[in-house]
Image (cartoon, rainbow, N blue to C red; front, side, top):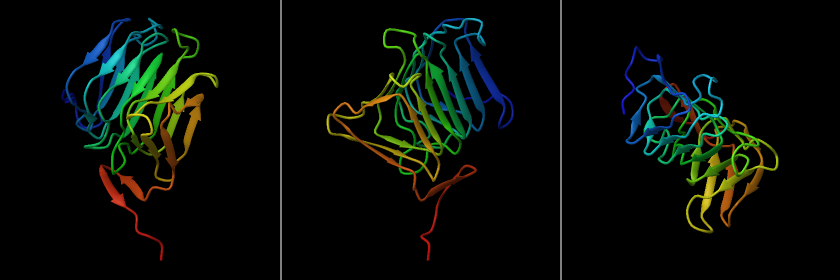
Length: 203
């Protein structure tokens, strides 16, 4: 799916009133911003499920709003081809694949917030990938007792969260699910515009 409305940095909005949104196929933001909102701008607070089944790239900002009962799922990698400028996700239960790869998948902040007290598991965030490489990252499962699940790969697989000297904030109980987790805020990569630059060692 190509986002091509307006000039670079223009906003394209997909809105439903509590109906599901499913995107099958790779998404290219084309340096534009995309908002997907299943709550009709809050008019239908419960919302509905939002699903992206393949990769998302393209130097634009992506905002997904699933409401208090709408689960949000991104299966493919985000920003591994061309880094996004921002990623904001809110919904009931959220499942998030890889962000970036060897270089950062986002030049701006990544914010993931699950609903508190809605649905059978009262809000959760599941990391189904093993690589989360971006700038500032916030994972908020909705309450301290709600779950941030590490679920990428088989048992004993390592999941790595990396930022370029930016903060990582996790709100919620963390369940490693027999996997390893590394959080590293000392990455030598910096995002400048649409370009990834490797910082040189200090001399």
